Length: 175
Ligand code: C2R
Image 1 (cartoon, helix red, strand yellow):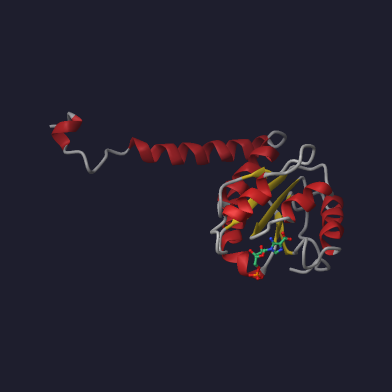
Image 2 (spheres, helix red, strand yellow):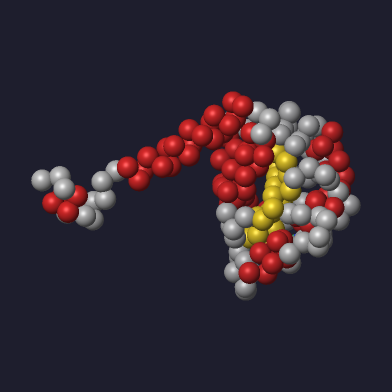
């Protein structure tokens, strides 16, 4: 997880998170990218605790071909903003809950970026949406990924085609 570990081969998404304690939530992003066949690299790095390692990793990740960054952090979440300040690639921010304010602090510190340095912020703990948004950004230039995302949407929609079990059959016009 350190900055010096070799970067995964041909990653398209680099995921950073501020603490090893964040990993159970962050894994949802990895799982979603795996399901879509998007290669990723994951690091535990902190703008506060390892300030030099963050820009060094961003540079190395770009050189390795990373096209989108995902930054996850709780409390005073500056990681996404610092990553965004060091790259022109899109940065998706995931505010994490876990502190006394249950993510309201990290939500504001991730989303309220000064003009000129955007961080596209998803909901608190919503690492899955961060992965989907990263994949949608990539899909602009990867048609096969666009198809996979389309299938995923269709699958999600098809759940609404099932009859609602709470509605009696006569009210569904089925008897
Ligand atoms: P610990 O559980 O390790 O004490 O960390 C982490 O993302 C974590 O959610 C507590 C919380 O601190 C966050 N953290 C940041 C940053 N680095 C760590 N917000 C940063 O650079 O923004």
